[in-house]
Amino acid sequence: MLLSKDTAEHLVAELTADENWDGPRAREAVEDLTRRAGQLADELQEAIRAEVDRALDAAGYVRRAEFERLEARLAAVEAAQRGETPDLPFESGSDM
Image 1 (tube, one colour):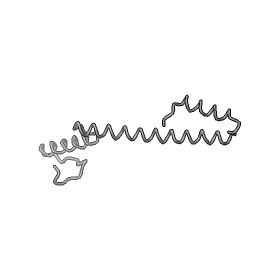
Image 2 (tube, helix red, strand yellow; image 1 turned 90 degrees about the vertical axis):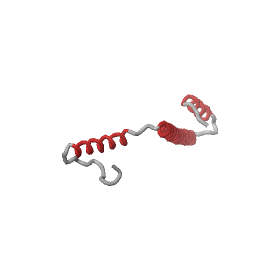
Image 3 (cartoon, one colour; image 1 turned 30 degrees about the vertical axis):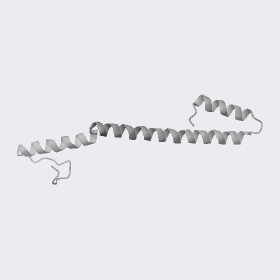
Image 4 (cartoon, helix red, strand yellow; image 1 turned 135 degrees about the horizontal axis):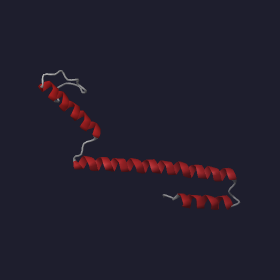
């Protein structure tokens, strides 16, 4: 269950007004709610990141790091064709 900040604050206010809830118990409840909210936010962020990654992969997009790696490989190939000794920013091998 997700709570808005206003709802959580309202809940805590009700609990602290209840004479059966003392200050330390109320603070503990607030800390627990805050911790849970942080965990839920982290889980939501990870789910969004995974879905965006999946959508980008499905659409055939490449990541910036992959693009930059390929760009460097192309520059090295072009330099080699011109007879220059290229700086190899990647591992040389059979994947060219």
